[in-house]
Length: 308
Image (cartoon, rainbow, N blue to C red; front, side, top):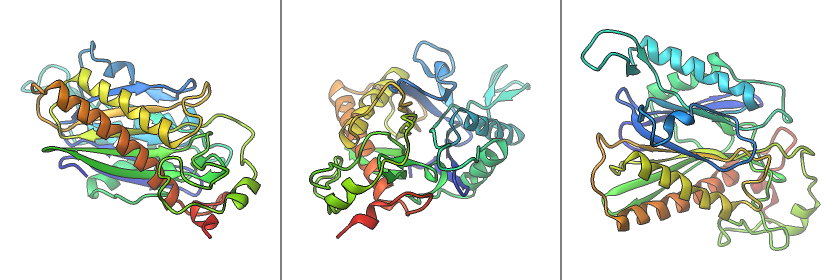
């Protein structure tokens, strides 16, 4: 994980919360929402033309729109520690308002739980205690499904010269991650395929099409807010490679982009292009890692169950 950032999870029995903590000074943030049925919080704030540029944490949660309440717990915890946007200026007394955007997945069909402020606070406390880079059925990935399989939370990292680009993704697509005829992962055709016949025989776990893939790309490159939004936009290419179909009318596909750099710098178009390509690659791999690391459970088969 990038210096200055940490990951914390609250893992319940059928849902959960993942917090990406950006440190006391926050991280420059932007976002791109591509799904037709998003569940999000504070995304308008992150548009390049708006005033506040730095965020203190990003919340990824289950529970559909109910799960957005988990961000309240994160805000309250940060406020108690004096972390937030200084309303009257950095050197002046006054309130500080933590900037905590978030996005949720639809996982209500695998269980009735709905994460709220208490669970959000627990995930932040875990992040403050040290970064947890577990993958699979953890945090917001606990109740995730990926087509016919159990989904999960995944991470991946790429390097672009002196810079790092990482992806932290909750894979919960209604689309398939496995090509039904070959049994190969769309996002990693070179990995061991599952038993294709056994995969085709699996029932689709949900009649509802209310699923989504959410996450963030994280970098230490000194991008501007507009460039961060471009990273988020191109990172969605990774979803489209790993999931078929992606960005459907009822998906809520949302990707945040966060930079830990202290201030933007002049980066060439060539470097930005390379960072964008790395973001898409990292998202693709993170989705694959989320699915392949998932445990069976909640009435769902896991990738590992179907390996010959």
